[in-house]
Length: 256
Ligand SMILES: NC(=O)c1ccc[n+]([C@@H]2O[C@H](COP(=O)([O-])OP(=O)(O)OC[C@H]3O[C@@H](n4cnc5c(N)ncnc54)[C@H](OP(=O)(O)O)[C@@H]3O)[C@@H](O)[C@H]2O)c1
Image (cartoon, rainbow, N blue to C red; front, side, top):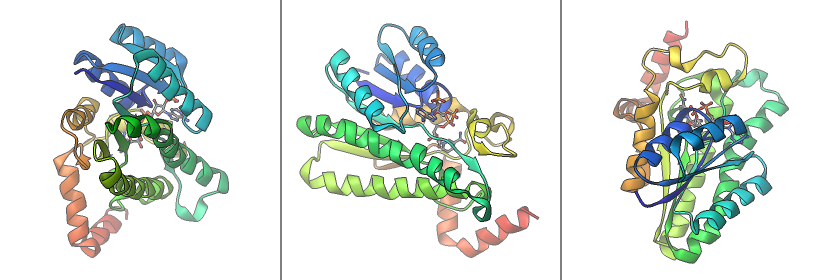
């Protein structure tokens, strides 16, 4: 694959696995996250066509620097994956201001920073792809304790669709994709804010991280507007949209 791909949240989980799979296909990957040691180790593993750039995606200046560094080093960016994200376990009744701000910063502002950093470059070429990683929890209320995370990701969904519509007429060469995973076996649970978090990797039914990352590789190879990483999860969401009352009753019964 002859593409230059920026991946945020590349120091672990879906982002790291995506970078590995892209690197194995010959893509050039720019790895962004806060943990330098993990990024450097992954860049060494992938080889000369990988570059680690320590980035805090909640800081606009960091993300602008990430885009500049990628373009200076490789001449262009073809794909930008806004994958960095963080969950929280907290009922809506107990959410504090700081927690709400943290959810908005890491899951929403980070996406806006990424879009704003790369869009002028994509517009100048009328080419490129932005992939925003959401969650099935933003489509159906599967885990009430993750409400703040899910609601912010729902905002990302609408932002993504709106950007796609805006660019369709002015810059039809730019693709905008929403990527929707269900539960994936990563460190996401243990990295989440709040108490009582479990390790996703121990949960039955969690999708292997390799499969979730492969869905992103596939949507880079053949761009589409919205993709679920699992057909089972897509069907669960579709069922919720068809019969929300039934599904909500089932969910409530399961919690008691
Ligand atoms: N795993 C799931 O079940 C699941 C389900 C649906 C959607 N998702 C979404 O998938 C994406 C990836 O999650 P994951 O499962 O791979 O989780 P993960 O294993 O916890 O990885 C999260 C990544 O985001 C990075 N990150 C967090 N805060 C950051 C910041 N301020 N600046 C830069 N990077 C930051 C982390 O790196 P550093 O800590 O080194 O910065 C890490 O590389 C997220 O958007 C998540 O919402 C996950």
